[in-house]
Length: 142
Image 1: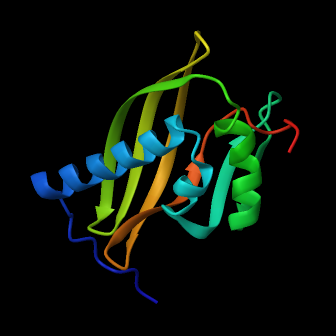
Image 2 (image 1 turned 30 degrees about the vertical axis):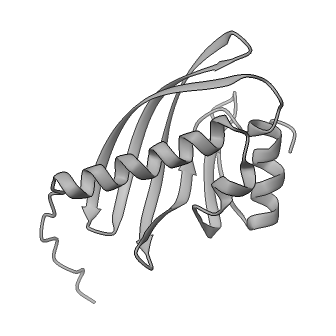
C-alpha cells in the first residue's frame, strides 16, 4: 500500500480564525468548570497520552463517562481558574490539526505553567479534540 501524497495544506485566515474561536469557546467552558460542555467538543473515544515522574510514558482511551470523571476532578474543583494560552497550530490537512500550547493557569492565586498538545479532528463540520498529550499525569490518582 502506498501512503497518500501530502498536498502541503497551508491554512488561510478563515481556518485560523475558526480554530481560535473554537479554543475561545473551550477555554470559556473550562474556566467556568463546565466539564459537560467541554465534553460536547470532544470526539470519543478520546486518547490521552502522558508520562510519570520516572519518565515512563503511557496512553489510554476515555469514553465520555471516564472523561467527565477525570476532568471533573481537574476543572470542577470549585476554585477561581484563569487561563492564559499561547497556541501554535500545525495543520496536517484541512481537517486534522495538532495544536501545541504553552499556558499559565492561575487557580486561587497560585500560578502554574504547563505545555501540552491536542489533536483536533474536523468531523460533521465541527472541530473536535480527540487526543490530549501532557506530561506528568501518570501515577496520579484516577
